[in-house]
Structure formats: structure tokens, C-alpha cells
Image 1 (cartoon, rainbow, N blue to C red):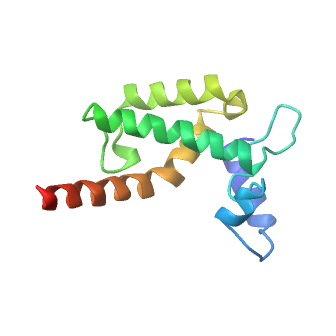
Image 2 (spheres, helix red, strand yellow):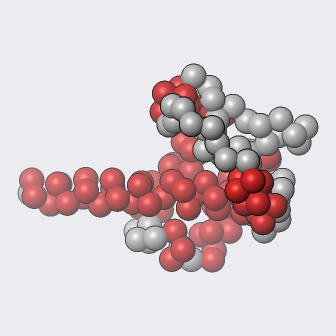
Length: 130
């Protein structure tokens, strides 16, 4: 998929109503990331997507430990973004089945805001305890 093709596909094929999120993902259903497909064209299941998310979160945590975690994903340095794309695509080659690494970056743009917000809340609570 090219990103524009995927966007058009989603607009023309809306997700049917029903349960979303953690419950379906825990049952192995890929709810939010249908663009993650194997080379065969079959979509990745929810368990596989969860593993991808875990690797991405490990990357964010590493950024944070090194003092390089930006407040927004778009503020990430080019070198760090390239490192993220390479790490994600090496571990999960299906993320490389696109132009300009948009699949790896789509994971981050969907996930990073919640991760950084949670990290910021935890950091604030720790400051209060000191």
C-alpha cells in the first residue's frame, strides 16, 4: 500500500460498528492496523500487532532514558526516526512493504501521544513524592 491508497481504502470501507480496542485485540483481532499485512496480502492478527507495539514502546523508553524523547513524534530528530524505522522494519519486515516507511511511522503517530502523556504523568507524580 501507498499511504494515499490506504487512506482512500479506509474512507471507502468504513469499519463496521462493534466492540473495539483491547478486548478484540486480546482475542487476536487486528482492529486498528489493517494496513499491516504480510507479503502474501493477509492482514496481521492482533497478537502480532501487539508485539509490534511492544517493540515500539521499547524504542520510546530507550529514547526517554537517553533524554531524547520529544513531546511529539513529529519533533523526533531525523537520525532517531531513521533508527526507529530501521529497527521496526528489521524486526517486522511487513512494515517495510510501503513507500517512505509510512507504516512504521503510522504505528508511532498512533501510539506515541498516549505513551508520552503516560510518561509525563508518571514523571509528575514522582516529582510530587520527592
